[in-house]
Image 1: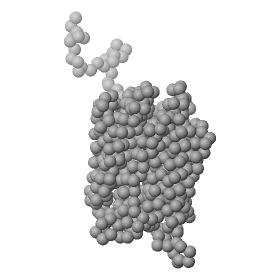
Image 2: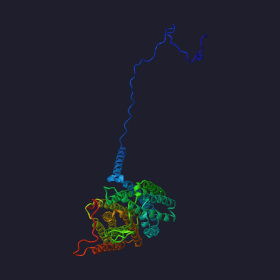
Image 3: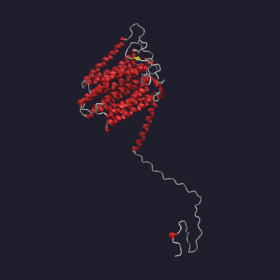
Length: 496
């Protein structure tokens, strides 16, 4: 009764234990001793379970990292990183990747999306709208770009940026007539880019590398990138539509434009370059006008033009041939895949082999390539079968690659350094026009295998015969000491 209720005790009051009913015992010191407690370690986490999926993922990461490291090292080898060739290599790779994705979108919207009867008209309209204007403008575009001695990196950036904008226009209008003028602009800017790139290569050439090796490296990287980008573009188009595929194409072109602006500043320095005439075989310098190159360059260019025309013919004609031969969609897809695989593998093989034939004479190599293509085309006309068409596609791609490598070597050997950029630019324009002519022939002929290959073989044999006849007429007369068009000493070790 007299005690303080427990509920009213101060919260800070201390209670002492009672012992035996007697008075409170003194407090006990419970302060812990200064003995350190043993350090406790957390339980180790259980090791992740090893599965086939995790092993495959880890191995894939290792292989991807190693491949990226090797690709980067290859792109910078032989002084390419210091001279600016590496930057041009990646600009060209993105250019070819974007072109491959544009080709996928046009194939899907103009060719495969239409009925069989409308396909020929669509492709004819595409060829007319895109190729014919370039064929008419090429005599103007080529010299104009050739005279553009300064600001070429900005011109490359404009060609890529312009195609990015036009790809967005195509994405917006891929199902109406606005697609055609946009495709025209994309193709013209692509051809202009090829001419500019050919003129820029001598300006970024490392001292330890020949023009042949530099162009071969550009081609190999570009072909691989185009193959990967084309496959990815086809997958994107099949999964989410062609408009999204064109948006991705615009992003690729835009990335290429950014890299083009970042090319070295010496790309814009002309360094005493002069215009060259690659169509005349007369070796007479004209003061104040275009300097004419040697007959070796002109004849090699004619052989390459014949091969490029065959490539354009096969590109267009083979598509119609597949549509007329294979009624089932799956078999037609496999047939087109076989043709594309043969052409891609042939291009890669020809470029890789041609860049390593250091002891071969490029004059003979380009003639052998054109002659081999002519012989295989004749065999396809006589013993026609779709397997022969695939064989022609592969051999034609190899011959085109070998011929281009040989032309590059001949230009390096025969053309003075001050004329090389112009010679590359003008020769590239001629080759682009030859492709247009071959494509026009492919759409003009009926989709009958033996007819198409017979016409192509006749024209190719005629072209090779004219080249051989020109060589025969240029031979020195008996008893003379040397010919006025004898080749000069090769420049560099690549073709010595």
